[in-house]
Image (cartoon, rainbow, N blue to C red; front, side):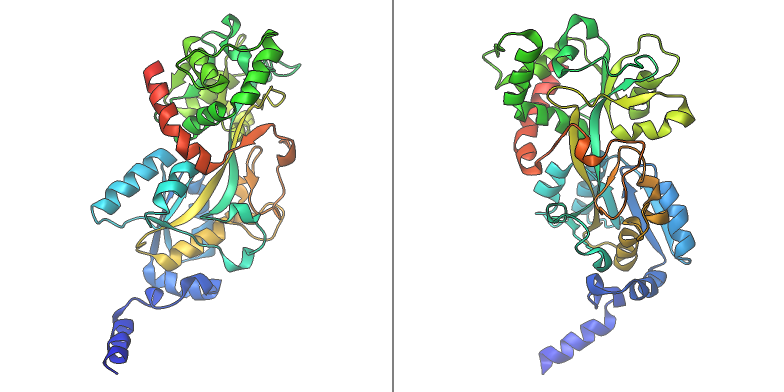
Length: 370
């Protein structure tokens, strides 16, 4: 009897959102609780969170969405630092870097899964655990279509290690941008394919230096030694490669969805899709709730909203991400017609567990090569 009385007292003093099963609630029930919370803070890997902020507040008056554009690497570092200090200020994280997120943050209970009930069964099962994928994003080799109207000047990754392309390959610093590190890690894990691509390009079997483990690592070393240009800003990579006025532009690794800004920015970015053995990687961007989120009902409402409505574009909640080169995890949402269909993109899909096991060594290698 005493236990029942204590339990009843606890429920009476707990915030309503904590005393109920939020994951099973309807949108109407979540909205009622979210209005009491008043605000919700979202860290986002994409600046497009600003468009979500406007659309969400219009649909759900009375809730202030505070959207912060923070890349995944910095989100991870900040979340760990704040939670270790006992600070719980963020509600929703929209981030990639699945090897670290799945391998460290989830097992440490820093992030929690939420699957909106209305979209159950609309996402491939492998994209729903341990967190739910919002969209598949990319790091792919891109070129300037205005300078090369007949197609990509690169048809084999090993071309990037030749004198012709010395100082003409750009990427963000993999020591500072986890998605780029995941790209290099995937290359290292695909040594058999990289060895076959080497022989196809150079006409002889590869000879891997003794201190390296496979053709993938040999490629990474050769790429750096060919004066790979590392840039801190993704927008600088896009502008440098895509500028329509450039006469001898570089190529670069970036998100395929960079082409969405071609018209606005005067760029001519296009994916180098016909590359042996692949143009880059495909990886999940996930939505998750932070442990001890201060606005747990509003957090779920935001996630539900960002998965979009039942229209072909996903409506206001998904349309900022319904662009060429981004692929909705909900396959009820159509791919942008200006981009290649998902099944046609020549990209490796990462295995987060395998990447997690190898990326520390590749990071050490990258730092040593810089």
